[in-house]
Length: 232
Ligand SMILES: NC(=O)c1ccc[n+]([C@@H]2O[C@H](COP(=O)([O-])OP(=O)(O)OC[C@H]3O[C@@H](n4cnc5c(N)ncnc54)[C@H](OP(=O)(O)O)[C@@H]3O)[C@@H](O)[C@H]2O)c1
Image (cartoon, rainbow, N blue to C red; front, side, top):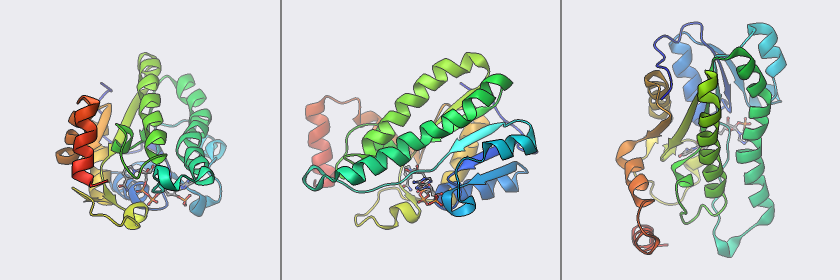
């Protein structure tokens, strides 16, 4: 659905949210493949918006990967408006800030790509993800619309939906995470998906394919199964 990418050498890749977890592993993976990297995160350079410096240095961008995001477990009986707004601010508005920073450049170039890390938690409603889930559902919808708008303009769009990945973000989870993979495996899957030109890059498939099927079920069956499997 996107052009295949064979050779990462000298590709100019900007990773936003590269200080830990999946973003940091992606940086290591792409560095090993010879890509030119710009890495952003609050704890790396103190500010997310470094576009002008990157453009001045590189003169263009081949790929932007928006990885930054945060998670807080929430259910209806512990709804916290401040925390909810913080999740929306980081996961959704943060991504919109990134789009604002890079879309004019990508459109003017008429080539390059943008990948956004959402989550399988955005595929359908799940317990403990009362607000995290909707922020990721919005990103999934956003990527679909971006693809429709940008594909014909020569710009690749990648929707990245990980299952459970062992990172600082999931370290605080107090439940057993099915099909948990390492950040290195996640980075490898993302790079492989981009190389193959996939739009929907999701992994590990033994877990994500189940969730993709579940979302197609009638709600009565879906709610019953989720309740049965999670006990929540
Ligand atoms: N781990 C999983 O199981 C899993 C599953 C599905 C989707 N995801 C998604 O994958 C992405 C990466 O998560 P991760 O698991 O690798 O977690 P992580 O290790 O906590 O990394 C999160 C990254 O986002 C940045 N970030 C966090 N809050 C931010 C904020 N308010 N403003 C700007 N940057 C912020 C962090 O950098 P600074 O704190 O230095 O800014 C860090 O680089 C997230 O979007 C997450 O929702 C993770």
